[in-house]
Length: 340
Image (cartoon, rainbow, N blue to C red; front, side, top):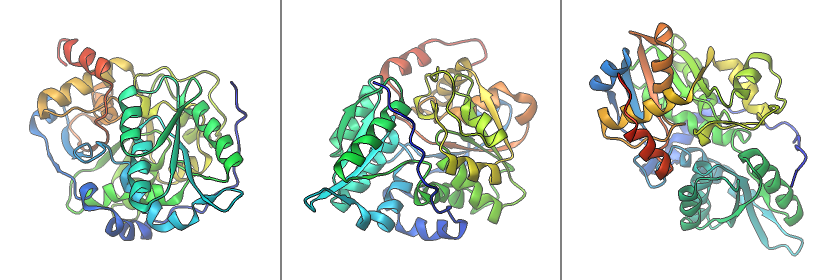
C-alpha cells in the first residue's frame, strides 16, 4: 500500500545550549559511555581512532539519549483520542529509535506504537516488543512504514514522534559530542548519517565548543539521498528504495529540519560501499571484541574506503549501534578478506 509523503509544518530548531541540560536528564545507563584511543583499530584503518562505544547499554544503541530527553521535555504532550483517553505516541523506526522511544515511553507510562517495515530486522522488532511497544509491520522500507505510522496517529489522536525532526531528539544525541570532547580527543568527527539527528546534534555541540573540529557524515552508497539533500538543500525523496545492509542509515525520504541543521554544522558527507561496511563490522569485532551493526560502523568504513581523506588523522568515531541482524553478522565475520 502506498502512502503519500506528508510534509509537516517546520519544528523549532535544536539548540546547542540545551545539550548540556539534556545530558543531566538522560538516565545514567546511557551516559558517559566508554571512549578511548583504540591502538589496534588505528593500525587496521591507518588513522588514529578515538572510539565512543554506544552499544553497551540496555538497548545497544545511542537512541535512548534523545528519546529520554524528548520524554522529559514533551511527555506531557502525548496525544489523546476522541474520548479523552491517552492515545500516546506513534513513531516509525527501523528498530533502534523504536527501542529508544519504547524505553523512554515505558518509564513515562506513555503508550507507544511503532511502525516498521515488513523487511525490518526481526531481532529489533522483538526487542521493541519486549520493551513494551506495540509494533506494526507495514511498507517495504522504513519511510513507507513511517508514513503508515503518521496516518495511524492522525486517525487515533496519538502524537507522531519523528526522529530527526523533534529538536529534543537531536539535542539528546548531541550529548555524545559533549562527552567526546571533554578532552582533546581528535580533529575529525566521523558520524553515520541516518535521519540526521545524531550528526546534527553532535555538530551543534562541536560548532559551539570545538570549532576547529571537522564534522564529516557518512552515508551508504546504496542510500545516498541524505548526501544529496545536504549538498543541495532539496529534501525530495530518492527515486529508488535504499539498497544497503545498513538499515539504520537506509533513508529514502530526508527530514527537512534535520537537513537544515546538517547544512549549518557538517563540513562534508562521504559515501561508503557495502564491502567497506562489512569490513568495518569485522574489523571492530576483531580489534575491539565488539558487535557493531553496519550503520554503527559507518565511520570506520569511511576510514577504510577514503584513506586519502582520513589517513593519519585523529578520528572521533561513535560506534552507535550493536543490533546487527544475526545472519548478516555471521556473513560479515566469516567472510574474511585480505587486509580486512
